[in-house]
Amino acid sequence: MRIAFLCAPTPNMIRPSYLGRHLLRRGHEVHVIIPPSPREPELYGLDRFPIPVHRCPPGSLREVVSRLRELAPDVVHCMDAGRATLPPTLRYCARSAALSVVDMPDRLVQWRRLRSKLAFIYEYQALARADAVIVASQDLLTLYQRRRPRARLEYLPFGLELEFFEQHRHRAAEIRARYGSLKLLTYLGALVPQYSPIEALRMAKVLCQRRQDFRLLYLGRGPQQAQLERQTRAWGLERLVEFVGFVPEDMLPAWLAASDVLLLPLADNAANRYRCPQKAFWYLGARRPIVANPVGEVYRALEDEALYYRFGDPADFADQVERALSASAPLPSAARLAAHSWEARADRYERLLSSLRAG
Image 1 (cartoon, rainbow, N blue to C red):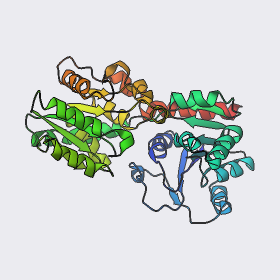
Image 2 (image 1 turned 90 degrees about the vertical axis):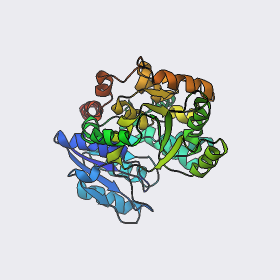
Image 3 (image 1 turned 180 degrees about the horizontal axis):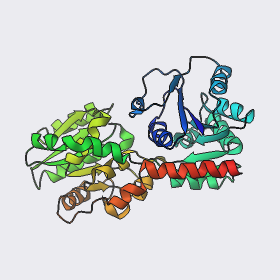
Image 4 (image 1 turned 180 degrees about the vertical axis):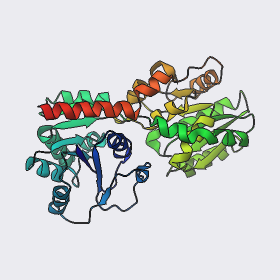
């Protein structure tokens, strides 16, 4: 089957990259189409696989449809359901025998709160005209089920690339050696308010009153970094906190596997319940103790194989970190990793396509 992922100008390439490579291995022909973007997208290793990436030139809806006609896919997987992707997907599929699969982004729901007319239109068109709409969270699935859409709704969260993780975790010992006997408490992600990186710093302020044998590592960068650095100095935590910065994808398995505890703070609000944080699956792959908040897809991914704290309570966060440092801390199981692998996601995706083709 020929499958074309049609991506947005500023694309989220997680699903085309990881799902695409497994579909390729199963004998499908996979293409990725990316419209012009002001920045180069993160390809998540897509360039290491023989999947053609087509840079669609600037232009009109007609030119994107023309590119689809040249490729003649059996399935158009529309990423992001926005102006650059949804109209050409629906037009091409309406005039061909191709299936239309739309990946509904969680931010459409957030746009609706801003009363964006375009968001209502894209959402309605996808639910009313596509063959299938994919959502990455159960909460988003429940929201759309109430709308009784014509499109088939499919729950397909992100996942873990087991093979890649095992290939790249070998440098964990080298990273571990840099820190000696210090306990490494690691936060992975963009340093932006919606991901609550300040929660980890508040926890460190409490924990340092109990013990000094740890290092809080921030893997990532973002606009909140300057504020976090100022707060680190104000609380006198410079010796205990390190801003590592951006870590390339092929080094993430090593950093995470070298950690003693992985931190995943997340406020319980609608935006986070509709999201599917990819780092929850990265954390699973490290098979290290995890301290998180039981919110949406984070809890569905981790369940009882992680520890949870009350969001906004740094003392409770510190308590759970100390539990995670003990010998009795829960660890992700091999069965959980297999269940959340991209291999398992590809199985489900193929079943979806087979069902759609069967009518």
